[in-house]
Image 1 (tube, rainbow, N blue to C red):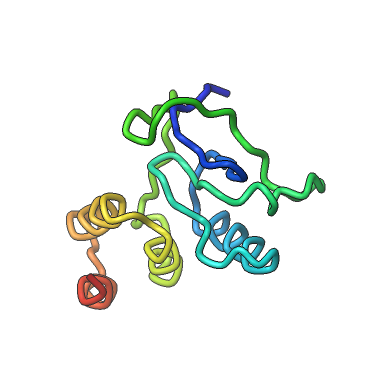
Image 2 (cartoon, rainbow, N blue to C red):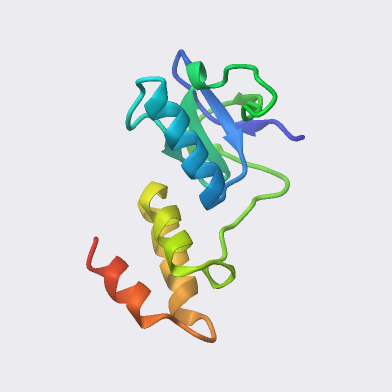
Length: 127
């Protein structure tokens, strides 16, 4: 796996890859550990409190990182494609996405073959 270029605070780890399921799992782990609101979305994954990585077999695996957030890189970026997910999954994903990613996903939805007006109306109003 490639090393990413990010700046982490003490007590933070980076989890590579993004999906609605992974976001939900990380948010639940953070809440259970008393770290509400401490899961941050990046282009390539999530920055999470290291305390939620308990070392059990089902815990996410941290990815080595260096540098600053502005230079984050990955050989294989994983982009969320809203056309491959249900409205509920897209809404859940957008709830953890940063503004740039949110705009990218909504643009992909708008430009898709079957743009879902309900989803666009609900999420555009959330801005």
